[in-house]
Length: 403
Image (cartoon, rainbow, N blue to C red; front, side):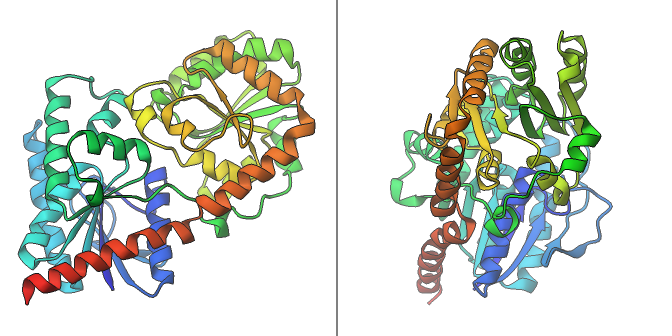
């Protein structure tokens, strides 16, 4: 089976998007399938036209003309569509699997129509809600409504739709998409990468001056992640747990503002920023953390979409505490595999974390239950089997249509 993945961006860039893509492709390669990928104009532009990264062949698309919206997006789709078609003519895929945002699905349609190849469109988040989450859009605006309509249009023209969680599926059902056209391919963890929790890196802890109770966040610093609420919770947490410290690993649009907020905190000396670290170094930082905290703010994006990071933390044998938004409730059973606290509420964060830190007797059992959940229900090498029946059904239907 030949699968061509159509992506916004890919390795060697590091993000939750690229890590999910890597997991899908590597698992498909392990099944003996031939797999390649095409990245769009928004991938970095100093890459060669074709390159292999981590055993995956990536075909790159050059920069599109810089024009005001929506002309810029139209130019991107046109250029990306031409590149996808050229690659597809050489690779001869049985399936073209386009991943959100919706521009990727629109670009892929040029090749699927020309070559009469089925299109699977995978939605990891709705583009309009992601724009609200990262501060570049406003819910209910004209652009928001137009993007939502475009998303619905693309979904109805794809041969099958994959989503990463039940929240996204419920939204599509409400838009009138038939249940049998939607499959759920949940976020998972490559247990070969995260399956062996590392011992505490004492040298790194000493370098960072970490000891006592360590609360951590490892990921991207977007506004919707709620890290300002976590920093705001630290004075009350330290009052209850004097040894508590906060370790923030990563970077993003909110980093400068968060650093300013932390510097002004009465417990500024208990907050450590590390910056971005190479992916192969992440395990060292996981080893230092007692509780991984995910204080996402409540909005459509966080209610609908399940994140990847809590699953990685569970696989690492870390305790997880998160806000009670819909995406977290789909992953975490409160008091069983993790702790849920009220979203947008620093006082609730401090109370939940203090209570969790005080209950060390229950830590090992909770870690074991969380890790078992990931192994049994969120392991990529079992999750990937969900694609195969969909692929084979579409390939068979396409063969009948060509006969």
